[in-house]
Amino acid sequence: MSGVPDSYQVMPLEFEAAGQTGEERAQRLQTVLEAPGFPSSCVMLIDLIRRRADVAVFDFTTQGVAIRYQIDGLWHPMATMDLANGEMMLVVVKHLAGMNYEERQARQNGSFRLLYDGVKYKFRIVSQGVQAGERIGVYVDFKRPPLETVDDLGMRGSMKAELSAMVEADKGLLLTAAMPGEGYTTVWRGVLNACDRFTRDFYVLEEKSRVEPEVINVTGITYDEKAGQNAFSDMRALLLREPQVVAFAEIPNGKLLNAIVELAENENLMTFSRLHGKNAVDALLRLLAMKPDLPKVAEQLSGILSMRVLRKLCPSCRLGFAPDERLLASLGIPPGRIKQLYKAFVYVPGQLDPKGKEIPPCPKCMGTGYFGRIGLFELLKTTKPIRKTIASGKLAELPKVIAESGHISMREEAILLVAQGTTSLDEVQRVLNK
Image 1 (cartoon, rainbow, N blue to C red):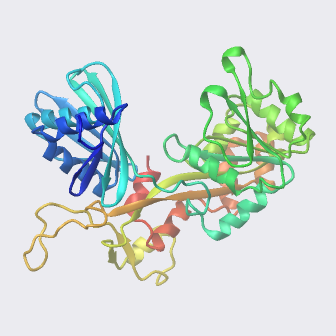
Image 2: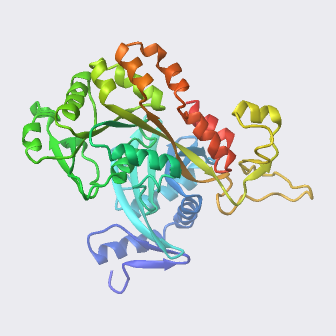
Image 3: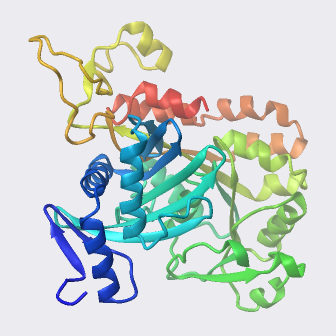
């Protein structure tokens, strides 16, 4: 449309609709600005930004629109929207994203951008017909700094020093462990970034359909499972390059695990890999359940770094309380060591202060009580007693042997974060009990 700009200022929002040309984008914006659902769409988008919701899901049914936001990795149910307003908002969002708003069954994807309070955000929209009606996913790109290093993830200094010594070893096998969706890729990248990749030649082996973002100074090599290949198919060619470190993105079975530990031993290499696990002991037992050559694994396994993710208490509204001695004893904290712990203040509509005034939600966390996340780390070092127990095959004794070795468990690491006021006991229990 002649004379209409590609973006249109609506304080405090500036939209950039989908489209191949400036004219197409301008036409979409003009149509949206005149739509009855435009004001409620603006309110919804601002709400997503202010609440820091990475994802919002809108389920359209004949009874209304059920809404939930994912904030700091946790889903929060929101107030149900009436169907009429929801339908008008849906038309606006789909049209902005370049989607067909009349199509309610086939899967569609689209995106648009908006500028709010000086920051540009990209919104990706996914729609799909479901049995009850239609589901809309709204994904917000906040352009947060990437969590690339163990410092970014919040690892404490003394553990970082222990990890550094392990990753710089000349040979062995070091594993990372996490659950899917809880840092499985993040902790892996954190360990790779903790290594000195400028004085040693690093290679990572990945299946071609599961290649992950590049880590600087780590050379990626792919293999094709559909063609019958595995991580060792071209190992002879790789060894001609004289690598010092070889990382395996996954361990599918005990046979490959045996090949990895033999590679570490015979070629004097440091090797890395990863697997699923709720904590280091769980990961170790899962590894040994693959039925590898136990004495060889015991000899080469340097350790396991496991991670879970905790929400951090909002520093603006967290509530301090004096813990009683029984609580401190249950946490393993000596009496008198900690004078104050903290818990979340979760906003409840209608809650009154001592003067009878309604308490508003915290403007920083918008009433969730938490703001941001931190890695909860556990580093298991394979001591001589642990190696001996693995090699003997007495795996049922491993948890006891590990506990007696002076190992600091994930629960103990979590209590340290509670004592520091970083997170709450409720959050620790939520994460570790699932």
